[in-house]
Image 1 (tube, rainbow, N blue to C red):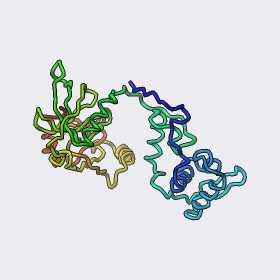
Image 2: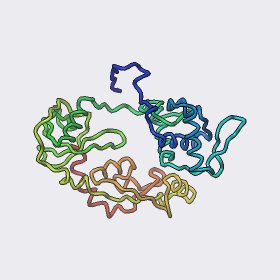
Image 3: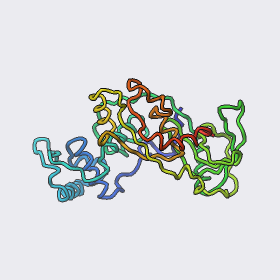
Length: 305
């Protein structure tokens, strides 16, 4: 269930004030709109940033000076249009950013006035149940991490019927794709653990902790995962998987914290070698499993708190 927050401001004031943003941001806006919508006019800048028409003209001229090959003026539609030679000037115009903003707008995580997206296509998001995080719990954890303090809490685990009192020293947050966790030293278990934030209740900030986050070696150890298309798949299927994952010479590599390795393998359905037995069921394989197995074994006994 989404948390409802009542604002003391009228709706039209409860959004960022784009008029205070710099010319650099307006140039990124021009670049973004040209790449993803194919056109930009001065009115777009005036409406979005609440600036004058002369200022908008100056911004378009500035962008044109930096990238004259990116746009040309179309008198018929009274707009600057993207040219075939367009090359984005800013990372803000990246594919991942665009798709993330589409998703954030559709799920109402982002205010429309905070996004550079103007026109957008029809979009469907696969529905998932919300994982509740109480605002008071989150703010208490943030305070403890910021100030280096202990937290006294009740934690509802998966084994015992009643919540257990815990004293934790939190130092980081993690998202496994479904749930938010806080990474913390557990003074009961005398080890660093992952705590599902939604299972924490009755929070109280305590004294300064004597636990150093630098001692959480699993958090600070970075591992490389190497995956490829399942070798049992036919050639055309392997090619499709390689395109899907952006593989180079048949593999793709990415880094993962040791503490999050279990969650990464679970999302990829690669928790055990048996998971990759059939290409029909699992399209990718973990090529360096032998190298990672000692790290996987360390996590088996404490996947969560």
